[in-house]
Length: 116
Image (cartoon, rainbow, N blue to C red; front, side):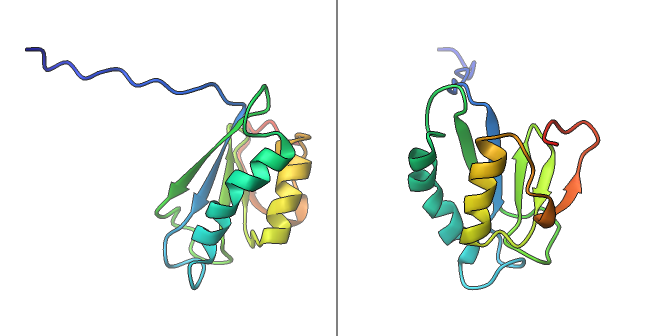
């Protein structure tokens, strides 16, 4: 018997959206509800497949515990705060579909980020 772990596989994707669902930066499950809404929103925007496919993941804490819900778009290095459902719609349309950060709700941008 072999103890070698099986190498995982994952489909290709253009961007990865991380949502903090920890209890400290948003109240009453707001972040989890936002995460749960993404499946339908991604399908409607065509981000669930094809060359613009976006992977989504829950994160338990970003250590940025104010102004939540907090989201991060990788590999762009763009960090968003106050990600209400309405602001998520703007992030999907403007950033994930068209590559332009929603500047009014960005609180950090890495130096090597690709969103302008």
